[in-house]
Length: 293
Length: 100
Image (cartoon, rainbow over all chains, first blue to last red; front, side, top):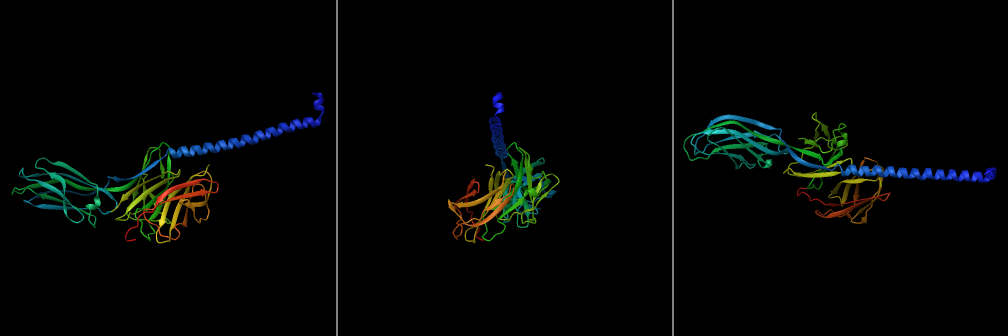
């Protein structure tokens, strides 16, 4: 040992070799650690993506009542009364609901039908009947509202006495209303990991040859922090607007509303099927198509 | 391996001699340089572009040899990055409205 220590060259060689091995170990362990961390981050990213799949669908928000009616009328045989309801905007209505709380007093053989005019002003039997006896509720949902809303946004309900009796029944309408359910988009996070919306693309299903608005998008990153977030397992409602407003970069403006929902300032074109496609910051996409014709 | 790109929108432009606008979104961990674009396996003239992390970028490319798009035809679009990652998907040309 003493002999070895006295040999400076040998000592230096051993120390040098050990240091070299330490440096090699340090280098390769760092490479491995870096690779391991990158793999973990990527695996986490892919796991988050797989665990935050989205779905998007159009829904009817039951929040708009159009001018309820309450009246009492005397109807002659074969008589009819029409009631008009102004829905205001034709393109943003997902469905129409008709609610009637009424009865009539007269011959028990009388029949009073409820009809609705289609957009060509031709009466269509709704299947609802107003009965002789106590007040009763009649409800009906019409899923293709554009068939029953005329060009001015008017829905016309006609009450018709179709009975054969010659008496004049008294019609009592305690409540009659047409509900125009607003069309909205609902984005659902199907997974357990939170998803942040990046963009919503709005694409005309049938493209116009020179249309500059066939492919538009709304940048969700322009919204307030948290508004573009869809918590795992939850749903975010995005309402449409009756006018298209563009942001400075030409994209569709998205505005926040106090309830935490978002308004997509996009007025869909009448007569066109439109595809809404959502993209999350994790690269997940989902799409739905709604026909506004 | 940290490159992740989503082809977020493909817009077949009519009356342009076969132009298509493609939007890409980089949701990976590193900036991505897209260096090549293939349509149905054939390379098309494409200026490479770098997409920073979390950014969207678009490119308009003439694809169809100056021919107009035929509605209903499906094309295979493939993007290749400088690092060799491949992002590929099929897209069908939509129909055109009669008024258009």
